[in-house]
Image (cartoon, rainbow, N blue to C red; front, side, top):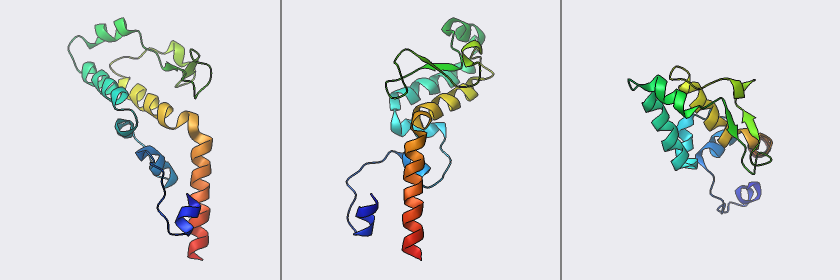
Length: 134
């Protein structure tokens, strides 16, 4: 990426919105998930809508969600639980805390398991920009 930039060439890499935001040290939000995984975004959006329904307490109790998610292949052994908060597997998702759950879930999927790689991209980009301007 840096070499393309230095040689004034097009970079043949498509970066997701949250990756670009991380490189530019911008804050990512759960809405960035819509550009990364539209189906997951839509399902989480439906959770938020459901939290405002009259029978939300019953629905959330039946769903039995907690502040932990199943690990993907990128995060470790598939089937392992990744806690979104300390002790997350014992914290139920309710209509009152669903916004926190959605935000943390989206952050985990977009950034959580790629923190080192995103930090390396940010460092490289910062280094490149610093040396091009001096």
